[in-house]
Image 1 (cartoon, rainbow, N blue to C red):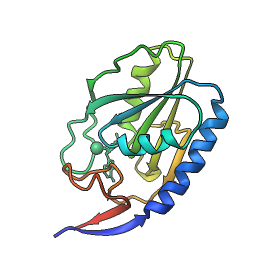
Image 2: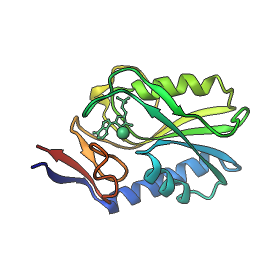
Image 3: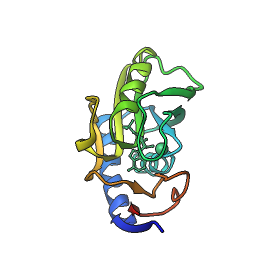
Image 4: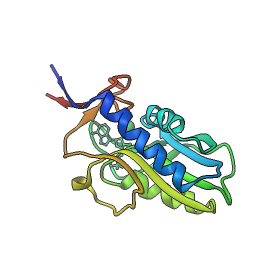
Length: 172
Ligand code: IMP
Ligand code: MG
Protein backbone atom coordinates (compact mmCIF):
# COMPACT_ATOMS: atom_id res chain seq x y z
CA UNK A 1 0.00 0.00 0.00
CA UNK A 2 1.32 3.48 -0.80
CA UNK A 3 1.79 5.76 2.20
CA UNK A 4 1.71 9.55 2.46
CA UNK A 5 4.15 11.74 4.36
CA UNK A 6 3.40 15.44 4.66
CA UNK A 7 6.11 17.56 3.02
CA UNK A 8 4.37 20.96 2.98
CA UNK A 9 1.38 21.74 5.16
CA UNK A 10 -1.66 23.62 3.91
CA UNK A 11 -0.59 26.52 6.17
CA UNK A 12 2.92 26.68 4.71
CA UNK A 13 1.50 26.59 1.20
CA UNK A 14 -1.01 29.36 1.86
CA UNK A 15 1.61 31.57 3.51
CA UNK A 16 3.98 31.18 0.56
CA UNK A 17 1.19 31.89 -1.94
CA UNK A 18 0.40 35.15 -0.15
CA UNK A 19 4.06 36.14 -0.66
CA UNK A 20 4.00 35.18 -4.33
CA UNK A 21 0.75 37.07 -4.82
CA UNK A 22 2.27 40.19 -3.29
CA UNK A 23 5.32 39.85 -5.51
CA UNK A 24 3.22 39.50 -8.67
CA UNK A 25 1.05 42.41 -7.60
CA UNK A 26 4.19 44.51 -7.22
CA UNK A 27 5.49 43.45 -10.66
CA UNK A 28 2.14 43.98 -12.44
CA UNK A 29 0.41 46.87 -10.65
CA UNK A 30 -2.14 47.59 -13.36
CA UNK A 31 -3.18 44.41 -15.06
CA UNK A 32 -4.90 42.65 -16.51
CA UNK A 33 -2.46 39.82 -16.12
CA UNK A 34 -3.33 36.57 -17.87
CA UNK A 35 -2.79 33.62 -15.55
CA UNK A 36 -2.61 30.57 -17.80
CA UNK A 37 -2.93 27.35 -15.83
CA UNK A 38 -1.83 23.99 -17.11
CA UNK A 39 -4.61 21.47 -16.55
CA UNK A 40 -5.26 19.73 -14.39
CA UNK A 41 -2.55 19.98 -11.76
CA UNK A 42 -2.22 23.78 -11.62
CA UNK A 43 -5.92 24.55 -11.12
CA UNK A 44 -5.82 24.64 -7.31
CA UNK A 45 -2.61 26.68 -7.11
CA UNK A 46 -3.97 29.06 -9.75
CA UNK A 47 -7.22 29.65 -7.86
CA UNK A 48 -5.40 30.51 -4.64
CA UNK A 49 -2.70 32.57 -6.38
CA UNK A 50 -5.30 34.63 -8.26
CA UNK A 51 -6.97 35.53 -4.97
CA UNK A 52 -3.66 36.40 -3.31
CA UNK A 53 -3.18 39.45 -5.56
CA UNK A 54 -5.14 42.62 -6.07
CA UNK A 55 -4.00 43.04 -9.68
CA UNK A 56 -6.91 42.33 -12.04
CA UNK A 57 -6.32 38.86 -13.45
CA UNK A 58 -7.86 36.84 -16.26
CA UNK A 59 -7.92 33.10 -15.83
CA UNK A 60 -7.15 30.87 -18.78
CA UNK A 61 -6.22 27.23 -19.10
CA UNK A 62 -4.39 24.98 -21.50
CA UNK A 63 -4.34 21.21 -21.57
CA UNK A 64 -1.35 19.11 -22.46
CA UNK A 65 -0.66 15.43 -22.72
CA UNK A 66 2.85 14.16 -22.26
CA UNK A 67 2.59 10.47 -23.10
CA UNK A 68 4.18 9.70 -19.78
CA UNK A 69 3.34 6.43 -18.09
CA UNK A 70 3.57 6.48 -14.31
CA UNK A 71 5.65 9.10 -12.64
CA UNK A 72 7.55 11.04 -15.28
CA UNK A 73 7.23 12.79 -18.61
CA UNK A 74 8.19 10.80 -21.70
CA UNK A 75 9.57 13.73 -23.59
CA UNK A 76 6.76 14.03 -26.13
CA UNK A 77 4.36 16.86 -25.32
CA UNK A 78 1.17 17.77 -27.17
CA UNK A 79 -1.34 20.59 -26.67
CA UNK A 80 -4.77 18.99 -26.12
CA UNK A 81 -6.62 22.20 -25.20
CA UNK A 82 -5.49 25.54 -26.55
CA UNK A 83 -6.23 29.02 -25.20
CA UNK A 84 -9.72 30.37 -25.97
CA UNK A 85 -8.43 33.93 -26.39
CA UNK A 86 -5.60 35.82 -28.02
CA UNK A 87 -2.85 36.90 -25.63
CA UNK A 88 -1.12 39.10 -28.18
CA UNK A 89 0.35 42.19 -26.47
CA UNK A 90 -0.81 40.95 -23.04
CA UNK A 91 1.11 40.13 -19.87
CA UNK A 92 1.06 36.37 -19.47
CA UNK A 93 2.11 34.21 -16.53
CA UNK A 94 2.10 30.47 -17.16
CA UNK A 95 1.09 28.71 -13.94
CA UNK A 96 2.41 25.19 -13.32
CA UNK A 97 2.04 22.81 -10.40
CA UNK A 98 5.59 21.44 -10.57
CA UNK A 99 8.61 21.76 -12.83
CA UNK A 100 10.43 18.46 -13.05
CA UNK A 101 12.40 17.70 -16.24
CA UNK A 102 11.33 21.06 -17.68
CA UNK A 103 10.14 19.36 -20.88
CA UNK A 104 6.50 20.45 -20.51
CA UNK A 105 7.37 24.04 -19.73
CA UNK A 106 10.03 24.51 -22.40
CA UNK A 107 7.51 23.25 -24.96
CA UNK A 108 4.77 25.59 -23.71
CA UNK A 109 7.06 28.61 -23.58
CA UNK A 110 7.93 28.02 -27.20
CA UNK A 111 4.20 27.78 -28.08
CA UNK A 112 3.31 30.95 -26.16
CA UNK A 113 6.19 32.98 -27.61
CA UNK A 114 4.59 32.51 -31.02
CA UNK A 115 1.45 34.23 -29.68
CA UNK A 116 3.44 37.44 -29.18
CA UNK A 117 2.48 38.40 -25.62
CA UNK A 118 3.89 41.65 -24.27
CA UNK A 119 5.59 39.68 -21.50
CA UNK A 120 5.81 36.00 -20.60
CA UNK A 121 6.73 34.68 -17.19
CA UNK A 122 6.35 31.41 -15.32
CA UNK A 123 5.04 30.65 -11.84
CA UNK A 124 5.27 27.22 -10.28
CA UNK A 125 4.27 26.00 -6.86
CA UNK A 126 7.01 23.38 -6.76
CA UNK A 127 10.39 23.02 -8.41
CA UNK A 128 12.61 19.92 -8.50
CA UNK A 129 15.81 21.49 -9.86
CA UNK A 130 17.81 18.23 -9.61
CA UNK A 131 15.65 16.62 -12.28
CA UNK A 132 16.03 19.27 -14.96
CA UNK A 133 16.72 18.07 -18.51
CA UNK A 134 15.79 21.31 -20.32
CA UNK A 135 16.84 24.71 -19.04
CA UNK A 136 13.81 26.84 -18.17
CA UNK A 137 13.63 30.16 -16.37
CA UNK A 138 11.03 30.11 -13.62
CA UNK A 139 10.23 33.58 -12.33
CA UNK A 140 8.04 32.73 -9.32
CA UNK A 141 8.79 29.55 -7.35
CA UNK A 142 6.77 28.48 -4.33
CA UNK A 143 9.12 25.82 -2.98
CA UNK A 144 12.17 23.94 -4.19
CA UNK A 145 11.79 20.32 -3.19
CA UNK A 146 14.06 17.27 -3.33
CA UNK A 147 13.71 14.56 -5.96
CA UNK A 148 10.71 12.76 -4.47
CA UNK A 149 7.32 12.04 -6.00
CA UNK A 150 4.70 14.27 -4.43
CA UNK A 151 0.92 14.43 -4.53
CA UNK A 152 -1.79 16.72 -3.23
CA UNK A 153 -2.76 20.37 -3.73
CA UNK A 154 -3.52 19.62 -7.40
CA UNK A 155 -0.81 17.04 -8.00
CA UNK A 156 -1.90 13.50 -8.73
CA UNK A 157 -0.74 9.97 -9.00
CA UNK A 158 -2.93 8.27 -11.61
CA UNK A 159 -5.57 10.98 -11.01
CA UNK A 160 -5.77 10.38 -7.25
CA UNK A 161 -4.86 12.69 -4.33
CA UNK A 162 -5.43 16.01 -6.13
CA UNK A 163 -7.72 17.40 -3.42
CA UNK A 164 -5.38 16.86 -0.47
CA UNK A 165 -4.72 20.20 1.22
CA UNK A 166 -1.09 19.34 1.98
CA UNK A 167 1.66 18.33 -0.42
CA UNK A 168 2.74 14.82 0.52
CA UNK A 169 5.47 12.44 -0.54
CA UNK A 170 3.99 9.26 -1.96
CA UNK A 171 6.07 6.32 -0.84
CA UNK A 172 5.58 2.69 -1.87
P1 IMP B 1 8.14 17.95 -16.65
O1 IMP B 1 7.69 18.13 -18.05
O2 IMP B 1 9.03 16.73 -16.49
O3 IMP B 1 8.77 19.18 -16.04
O4 IMP B 1 6.91 17.53 -15.80
C1 IMP B 1 5.93 18.37 -15.39
C2 IMP B 1 4.69 17.60 -15.10
O5 IMP B 1 4.96 16.27 -14.61
C3 IMP B 1 3.91 18.28 -14.00
O6 IMP B 1 3.01 19.22 -14.53
C4 IMP B 1 3.23 17.13 -13.33
O7 IMP B 1 1.99 16.88 -13.98
C5 IMP B 1 4.12 15.95 -13.53
N1 IMP B 1 4.97 15.69 -12.34
C6 IMP B 1 6.31 15.84 -12.22
N2 IMP B 1 6.73 15.53 -10.99
C7 IMP B 1 5.64 15.17 -10.29
C8 IMP B 1 5.42 14.76 -8.94
O8 IMP B 1 6.33 14.64 -8.08
N3 IMP B 1 4.13 14.48 -8.60
C9 IMP B 1 3.10 14.59 -9.47
N4 IMP B 1 3.25 14.99 -10.74
C10 IMP B 1 4.51 15.27 -11.15
MG1 MG C 1 0.19 15.87 -14.05
